[in-house]
Structures are given as structure tokens and as C-alpha cells.
Image (tube, rainbow, N blue to C red; front, side, top):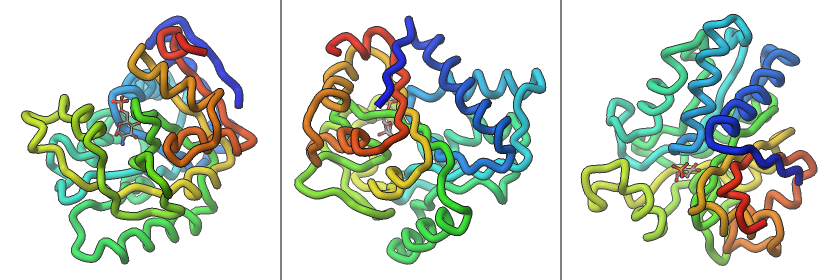
Length: 241
Ligand code: GLP
């Protein structure tokens, strides 16, 4: 596991964008795994600016997002469909048929999960997976527990995650209690992984990710088993290393 410590959020975001751009420039038809949350917003802004400067071309890129809230429609402002449109998709030349996000609104979730998983494999798997991290060590929406999901599944969110993500909603009651998330093996099968973290409230999770045991109660610790993981974190998130 490689750890890159940047001074602050902005330099962390810039570094992450440069790594994504070098992946795409090296392989224009790259399959990118994308994350949501507040952490990668700066990276997406950098990528949009790079696109406008002609430094990255998304025309052949395929993307797969990690997760979506259960039962939120794509036009719901808190959905990850909406987030991706606003933060990246509508600003660059990514074609809608090349962007994929699990759908939270379908009747048969089991079929949706299976379909999503197969689609990733049909695309040849993820070349570069971008991750954020929850303060409890969740990645995607793979929450801490005695066991973790291998593939894409409908999952229950923990109280800690509901509380933490309630800042995006009008009230904690409005936060969906479930989400659809790719599984741990889906993430760990990616060729390369970068994980972004910023701020003091991520320091404990980062410490456990880097120096702790591999433990299902800290899902991000499983990244230690992957040969090509780079953490790009700011000084505050690195505070306990
Ligand atoms: C959500 C997402 C995760 C993300 C996490 C951290 O729960 N499902 O993919 O990493 O939030 O969010 P933030 O970056 O806002 O701290």
C-alpha cells in the first residue's frame, strides 16, 4: 500500500485528478470505478478543468459507480445519479451509454445487482477504482460487520453512516436506510485502486486502513491485500499515521 500525503484538500484533489488523467491518457478506453461523497468533489472539479484545457478526453472511457441509495430516483438531488451528473458527467464528453450507476429504484434488486456485476465483468473489469472512505472504514457502502458482501448487493446502512450522511439531507429521517453497493471482491478485482481521504475525522479510519489488522469490521483494511493501492490523503487525515 502506497501512501501519498498532500498538504491539503486542494493538492490532494489535484494529485488524484492527475492520476486519473494519466490512466486515461495511457489507455483512452479505460474502465473507471467512480466514487461519490464530498471527498472526490475537488477531484472532479480538477478533471473538468483539465477537460476544458484539452488535457483529458473521456470519449472512450467507461465508468461504473460504486453505489446508490435505495429508492431514490435519479432526479432526486441527494441521489448519486444526480451527484454524478452535476459533478462530472454533464461537464465532459462522457457518453451516457458509457456511464453506469446501480439503480436504486428497480423492482427486482436481485436481478439489478446481478446485471450490474455482469456488466462490469463484460466491460473487462475496472482499470482504476477511485474510493472515498467512511469514518467507520466503509468503502462504497460496504459497512463494517462480521461478514462482508463479495458482489453487488442491497445493503443496510449503519447508524453512524446515516448520521454522517444526514448532512446532505434536510433531516436524518430522510436518509435512506438501505443502498445498493458493489461488493468487496468487485472493488478488489480492480487493476489499480486510489483511495482519497481528507480531514481529521478520517484519521482514525486511515490509521486502521494502513496499520491495522485485515478485519471485516474495518472494510477498508482489506485493501492491504491488494497489490496496487495508493492512498492520497491530506495531512489531517494522515495525522495518526
Ligand atoms: C458515502 C459513500 C462512500 C463515501 C463516503 C464518505 O457513504 N457511499 O463511497 O466514501 O460516503 O463520504 P465523504 O467523502 O462525504 O466523507
